[in-house]
Length: 250
Image (cartoon, rainbow, N blue to C red; front, side, top):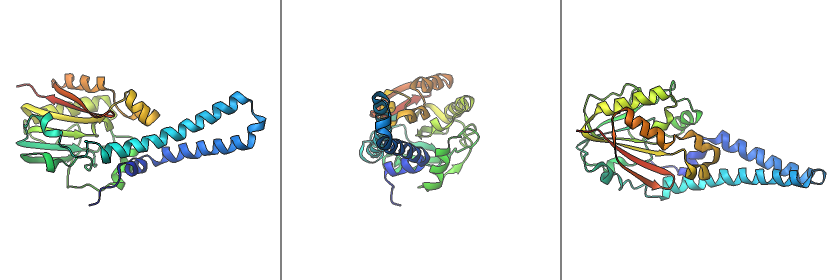
């Protein structure tokens, strides 16, 4: 199956925001051209600056998305085994219906014991995730289950990979329960690899107000502590994507 461009995917998932931004900004620029002689100079320049920033920001976010999902080292996944310390005899991947970002089967050793689709409209309320599920067919069959009740037996996995999914759980209590379930499913010494954009300055520069859809690093660390998982490593796959490895203590 041909993999759609990262920039195209991000646009399709969030097209009402992009189209709304472009329509408003272009409409403002056209209005300025018509009304420029009637407006105070300062007001005209502020309106021009606002329209320009909106157009530039939205366009830049698509350029960054194309780099992240098509050109960066994220795509190869070759960085994954090192972060998991080769504990991959039995591993699982958890997503919300979008499994195309990391080609895990190419880099993971051992046996995949589960592919779980944890989409739950009760706790994943963003319209973008619904559009994403409709527009992006799954690459491999996954078992549907709730993020608060994972379809994994106790201490089943040496490694669990959760990429670009956990932030979609918007409810705080549901996120805590999700991390408790992840810990339950890991064997002692097993590792959770969490791959996420962050609500930080780099993502603000790239995505503007859209960065608020992401979760701050402090929240991921709080959830790790809540679930009694320890930080084994933290690295940036790109300036905009963090890979956080959490370990269940022996």
